[in-house]
Image (tube, rainbow, N blue to C red; front, side, top):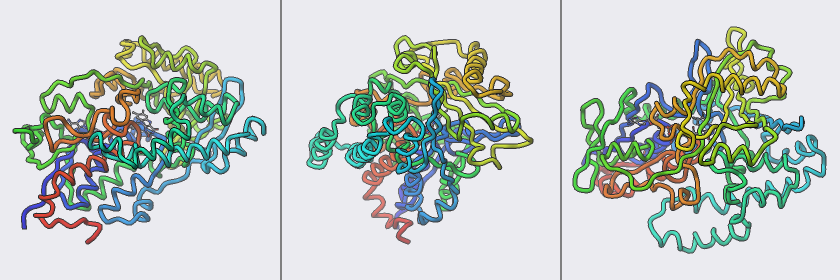
Length: 511
Ligand SMILES: Cc1cc2nc3c(=O)[nH]c(=O)nc-3n(C[C@H](O)[C@H](O)[C@H](O)COP(=O)(O)OP(=O)(O)OC[C@H]3O[C@@H](n4cnc5c(N)ncnc54)[C@H](O)[C@@H]3O)c2cc1C
């Protein structure tokens, strides 16, 4: 029997790990090459000065998207969930407003209307039930057809399934503006913010986003947030361990420097001067990085999402006790559309009346995030990216971070201005780690960079090179990149169907 086809996956972020798991499960031999020393990419838990911090993504939803690829390796959902050891984050978010009011959003969506009524009164809560129902309808119409799907060509875009879903989305009035759509259900501006700020996850200001972006609020608030015991880095670790158990090589500290190709096919990946032969390649780096690996210059320039400055530091246990804060706290300034205009505009500027995300992972997991009487605390301030505001962050990050901490201390987070700062990540440092425009949030989901118009997961001129990750479809964030790994794996499986049949490879889940 022939040897199984060999797939090289560049990058052990969540998209690469998801793709690798699915392909290994379907009988391919898989090698993952990763420049860093650990799996997970931008979803990581790091040790700074002996203390643990979630230094990348902190908001985790839809764990079933982690479970699915690992079941292809033969694990049961219960085994995956057991390894992830997820705890519900409840409240999912605490939202503090400039008028002094606060909303703690419960983990279970069914409890949200009561929480809104308690925070802002029954009048403000009116319509929240209907809003949550509408969000779920938007998700149901959109997810399978427009998000978790590979497009072939025009026929896919005009087929009956697409037409049905598009008609449903029109009926749900998702083609108008997001804020207006949410305002049809709830008229309290604070509640509107709670259900529209998520557009920023897609790099788009809420007041400019189309209502189809309401799906993000359902994938976020609507489904409940959770956190793995041990920190966010456990997600990549659990996925990588399952791959290694299934005989997949993951080469850490190994940077791919070229994708070798020949007559329309990728034939290998150069790592440390050696060429790893490949029957197919999945690259999870940013589009321009992949273009450099292939030796081709991309045709169109992309518009990137805003970036962020993130401060990680320590506070003595007890300092946070009198804060109105949970695991995830959003502190909104009084300004709203102006804030988004500043961070997404051209030219962009730092927020003048900022809104911030405070992360206290210790709320869910004190054993990991409290040590020696000190609690790990992180603050994220959205910023413009380097394309729209080429600021000298190496010089201004420290004073800007001090200003953010002082602002928040004055807004009620007493003692935060005395945070013992251990690290500040900022647009220049993201740029130094290879991220274009100095943003870890990739290409923005503008109208011309979304859905079928986003950088495709196929590569022009090379029929066995595929993309996964935030640069390609469906987009940025943990749920989309896990989906992208599956979409790229489906492309590879279709491309290598004959080789898989010749090798008699059986899906692992069927063994
Ligand atoms: C501060 C911050 C907060 C965030 N918050 C959230 C959040 O709360 N919720 C959420 O859903 N998302 C959040 N995100 C976004 C989310 O983390 C990313 O969208 C997602 O993790 C990207 O996954 P990926 O697999 O596409 O890419 P990555 O995680 O970037 O993985 C790509 C991997 O490829 C490797 N690589 C690149 N080039 C090469 C090469 N040439 N050779 C070998 N290896 C290479 C990299 O080292 C990296 O490990 C956040 C991100 C950051 C930075």
